[in-house]
Length: 307
Ligand code: UTP
Image (tube, rainbow, N blue to C red; front, side):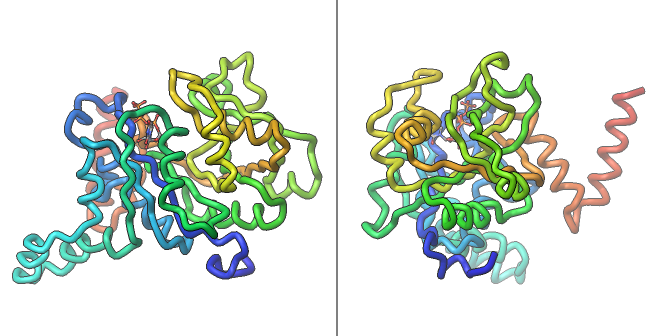
């Protein structure tokens, strides 16, 4: 990117991380452990996303949590006793791991009393924005979009076209019903080369035969402040929840520019075991300390399974 993000006219101050969902796909673990704290090898998904927000140059992380999920906020606080013990025992690596989360970025808690949907959760973040914030980033903590940096590309697209910009991935036809799916505008040769497309409609979890494309939203949103007004005007949609997709669709209908940046890299869905386990294996195989042991063990497990 040509300009450091802080000097960008669309610099993002606040990254909203909605983490108040029920995590039903991870029951029974999520009776007591928020799914956002489940470890990817040893680091919770939400800490990886906090790092992504810090790398973007944001100054605060607005974490939307539920009343029974305060462990998430605690994760970003100091642990004086634990830190003192680790320090006294000379365990510097572990001490650095304990401190890493709170040193990344300032966190601001926002409580969602009831899980009324992603749209409702995002809407609550308006109260922590400064008056001069025209844009807000939303990063879903159960989506890892690798390599980091897609939101910076999205900021460049917003600088060019204005409005809101979302990250998209191309999914298989039988997967569209799990996602918010984009209806795309006419091809513009220049934009297409850069993997950037104008969006003319958006629908949450369509049946495959109704899906307007196979481009789906993937957990990174750069939203114009107008989103908060739209969120106040939508009705509950899919699953009886207030859907962020429906507010974006409303903005599009009203002529607000919305573009997607098609992400070509990797993406891990940590929100369900079928995506979470491969993500742990992916990071585990690359881990400096455990990688080779995990590699051997995974090969053995697969060989035994296949025989
Ligand atoms: P998901 O739909 O993946 O999370 O929402 P969920 O509702 O917890 O999952 P299941 O379907 O019950 O297994 C994406 C993100 O939005 C947050 C979730 O915590 C997750 O990080 N979310 C969702 C909220 O903050 N509030 C809500 O009302 C719903």
